[in-house]
Amino acid sequence: GWDGDGYFKIAYDSCNIQTSVMYGTIDPISLEAPTLTSPEDASTTPDTTPTFDWEDVANATGYVLQYADNDASGDMVEVTISNSSYTLSEALDPGTYFWQTKATLNSLESDWSEVWSLTVFDPIGTPSPRFPTNNWEITTGTTILRWTEAANATGYEVELYDPNDVLFDTLIVDDSVC
Image (cartoon, rainbow, N blue to C red; front, side, top):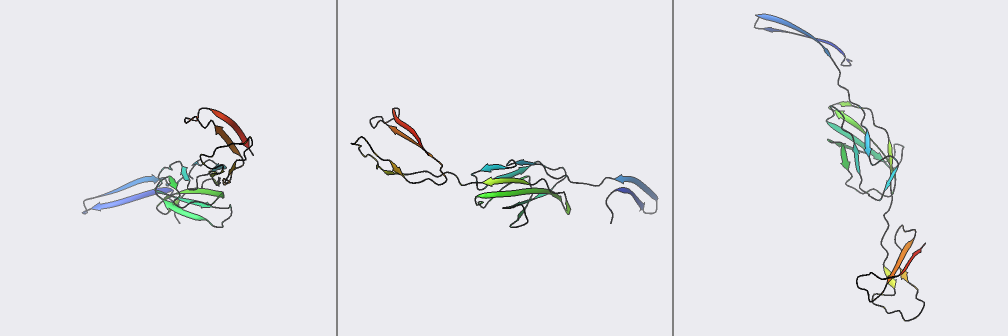
């Protein structure tokens, strides 16, 4: 088939009065592979609905985004969109994902971009105090503080303030627990 590179010739006849011939060259339209911009390659995020972004490609009227939870062709998701940015509407599970894009113009497609990776992790949860309860008065020299475990926490910061200080300006204990 014709690859779009070469010369053209157009001849026309206007009511048998005059015939003209025009010559020219045809430069084929090509699409460059998109350049990915964010999230950065090999980055990590607690955002389970990240926005994938890449530079606009000249002449492109659309893009195809592919992402998967592994670098093989396993559970590949493909989304066709009209601009160079896409925010996932469904949350990703924690794990490492690989993504790439290509530009489109009607039936013309660019090569795929580079493949970048993104690791989604669970955000750290919030612990809740269990003991002592709110407004509990500590009357002994030793008190054991207890709280619920926070998801994905690797340590805790414990701060105790003077109970008469309603503005929390007077810090009594500031300690880390790993």
